Length: 156
Image (cartoon, rainbow, N blue to C red; front, side):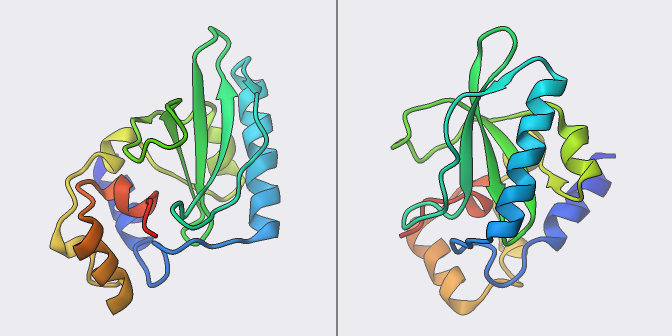
């Protein structure tokens, strides 16, 4: 299964995937999926969704699991990719990736879901082939070390 998932993630590495991408319709679908997924696991959405901006190419929203553990659900609209991370200082650039709570909800709604193993894979040259020259320059400058750091990045 991991190899199949990895192929799907590699297929998402298309031009523009590293840039902030605002898509209001995709955001609404993702946010509805976040609420449904959190209800399905007995958790809750605890912050407003934040849009991509300079220094962050993804949407994020704070969530809390039934056991009180805080986290964030991430969304790269260009890749239609959902992921999760542990809650950290919002200014922290290195995300600690986590399993997406209620991940089946996202899959059922047409989103790709990234696992922590996929996102923690070391970034290599083969991940960069489909990116634009500008995106490859950003990678050379910022030097992300993991695939997840490319897909959910802090490039300015």
